[in-house]
Amino acid sequence: MLPVMVLKDSALRHNNELLASFCRQHNMSLAPHGKTSMAPQLLKMQFEAGAWAVTAATMSQVRIWRHFGVNRVILANELVEPASIHWIASELGGHPDFEFFCLVDSIAGAQLLESTLAKATADRRLNVLVELGVAGGRTGGRTLEEARRVAQAVASSGHLALAGVESFEGVIHADKIGTALEAVDRLLAGMRALVIDLDGAGLFEHVPEVIERIPRPSGDEPRRAMGRTQLPSSPRSAKRLLPHARRSPLFPTVAIWRPNRELGATA
Image (tube, rainbow, N blue to C red; front, side, top):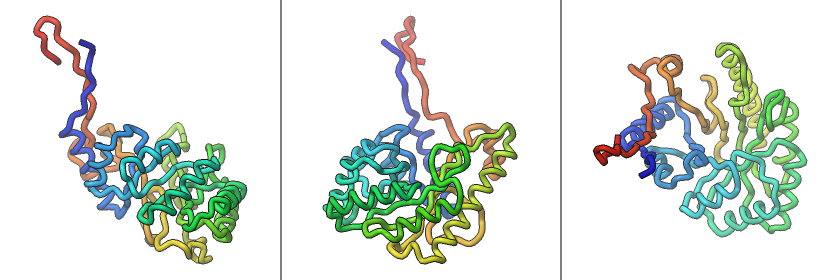
């Protein structure tokens, strides 16, 4: 027999509840990234613990989650492929309970969504999150002013609804953890300023709540703060982020079992 990889149910449930508890304590709504496992059973466990939505990386993943009945999906990417835009328009039109969000980081991207949705005769606005990037990063507006111009293009459209702001802090790297955290804090401060600015300008008029898609500093609360965060996997980093934890908060969930040739057992 070949080695077998197994998931430890007790560890999975422990980690799931720990993350759900962390989000409740910090008033965050969790949208776990489903691409890691693409396992509906694991996502069901997370929804039962209070997850708000599922995040997908590609439209094929969005379609899979819709197949399994997920009604709130965030595409952590720009939506630019016409056939996919038409499919989303059809899903939104045929399923009033379906909520979908995607990213936009350029005026050209907003115009492409607008023109394609017009051809699809969409009867519901498409929720979009303006992406704020960092210098040298993969995507996103490089400055607050650039992101504001994209948001204004979205708000002036006829088929899009500005639903919030998004960013990805994982592209920030530094030799020292303190330097990296300072850079992340600057990004969060910029996001916060952008959300407040756009809200003050009335650009969120088509949505009942505003999404700020990243953990953020303490202070005035936006109407909804939805964070995608990762808990630490080492005791050292755990003490820094979760000082109340008595031990490393996350348990290993994967094990490899191999047959014992002499005993015919597994170990």
